[in-house]
Image 1 (cartoon, one colour):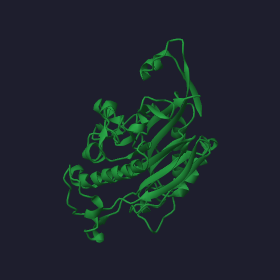
Image 2 (cartoon, helix red, strand yellow; image 1 turned 135 degrees about the horizontal axis):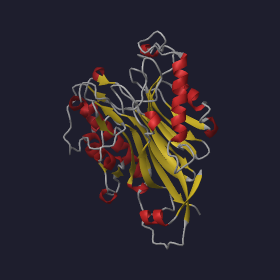
Image 3 (cartoon, helix red, strand yellow; image 1 turned 180 degrees about the vertical axis):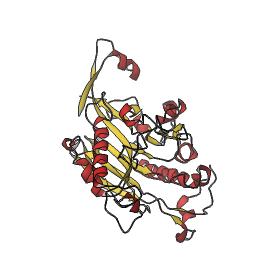
Image 4 (cartoon, helix red, strand yellow; image 1 turned 90 degrees about the vertical axis):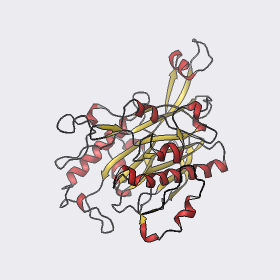
Length: 365
């Protein structure tokens, strides 16, 4: 846990009505999300399509490459959120991991072993076997419940009207299960950050395979499922603190985020029970977590309920967000100069995505 002092410049940022002479101490936690890009071991799993990530496969994925990938990722994890918070992230949402075993290998790496990370993971029905998971520092976060919630989407499923109130589940059960599109489950974790209950949803929404427009209904369905999960938590506790994060395979301006989930870019526009997306403003400025054909977008996002943006720092509240894109994570030459430094046939890189993070702070009593 890192304790920091905010003097006048940050006091003005928060809008507190206190004098220059006053200073307050705050507890700070970093919450991050990182798509690890194909974190596979070298063992062939007969139940999934992982053949290319074996020594004899298309990627020539060797033990040496795997071990270098683990070292690379652990370095990033150890540095996300610095220098504002010298501690590595308390919570890390992960995507594109093959199984629990690769996470167990990751948290043993020298750079992060001392943080004593716990793992919450379920195998998903994704055909390549890639899953989502949560890493958490046991010292600060105590999980009390967790579940994997399937995203039930189908080929040739009719698209709901944008403003339709029709129940998504009722539509889905009318469709032949043989047409189901198997994708990652949404992982819901509830627990206590220090002594405060929070809920975290980890996502890796359906890809744009087949084209952005044709595949958009799948991600819109993912956004609707996210919204239903949040609604259910808010029905139990209207002030529930919920963070949803992940690789959404859509940017902040796409329908899945803006309409299905209902995310707002300005705090003042967030309605009761609404959600706030600090990454929309960054996207509007041309910032990105990944690039395609020299066009940047922010697919990796951390979105939170209104209860995290109330101007009361007696409990954990959102401070600010960022994209972790240090120079060593960037390709320095070749066709993809300036892009995230990803895996290649000759070496293990980091990822084709930059990680993202937010800070949660509360006043130190």
